[in-house]
Image (cartoon, rainbow, N blue to C red):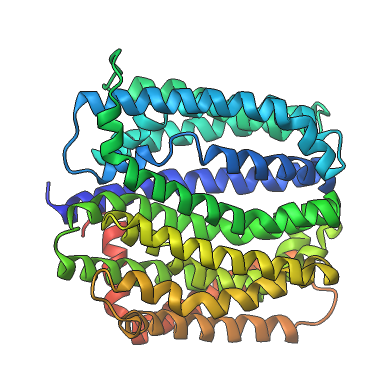
Length: 479
């Protein structure tokens, strides 16, 4: 199968998986927001920040190295598997023992048992992440899609059932563990590879430089992206963190759904193009323009309809989320493109350069959170937005040098979807402002979402028709 056909097939199945999972996740969030208190979400968010950080160490980047590496041996795979299993077990033990200290840090005793139970997730994921990497390397995205949707559906049912039965924050805990448990079983059943009883340090050392730099980059990136939740949880409390966490997740829903789908498929393909800079550049620009075509209107549409969206779907108790979305959603449009640059570092084997950029930028991002704290969650969000915009140009320019790409070349493919999205935003936001008071939020959404879609499609047809037709053809499997 050609690279183009492989990419189209992978995008189709990854889209089915990711959008199906994100849809279920959004539905679950809406239902649980009605059944649980904001503080319940805040408690689990406190635990999730620490758990997600420790999870970065579970394989030291070796699973990604398996995808990037041109040639694999059974000795390398078996060594990576056992290394992952050992680190996952160690991480579970460390988190269990540290949970009381972390609960004291947050000044929330309920966080301690939540973290201890969730420590089991490390062991489960450590036993299956290599199987996932092998499926991705072989572009078996149809198998991955079926497993991931089934896992998410099962976890959703567990979480909602537990919430109906009155388990509060523990409903979210049960949901996470249920998904990890079923996923581990299904990934093993789908992957034909099985570990042998061997471990070779020489094989591990052959990928360790790549893997450790990648892990270092992931650690600092995670710290920078989650320091806001740590600081808000520590100094502003679980309720404010609940508001902030929901706003951030709403911004991430379309962002992750689009960028993650395309990035997941393109990384193994980029790795095959790593020695052909011209092909790499063309593929990257095509990917960036396709992401912008979809993510730009979604994020600006969410900005225009933030008020009726939050009040209708989540209720008046979540009103503070609206102001946060007005800042975060526009940033999400730009962030959807920024998520693609990590694949340049990894596909080109320059995880060292990626790590140093992440360290420098991450420290500045954390500083922005600290500077915004005196003004509450709105101050943290606004301060982050300013720093994010200041870092945008170098964030693109540095990795682009690895493939001979200019930032202005990226601007050349992004201006059309940006312009069409701004036209759509002006129409929808203007209509919202001109609407008479007292109009139900559901009615506003039911009328303006289709209006925004029509305006954006018409604008794209006028000035971005070629890309619109190409993406439409790919989505229909005819690319």
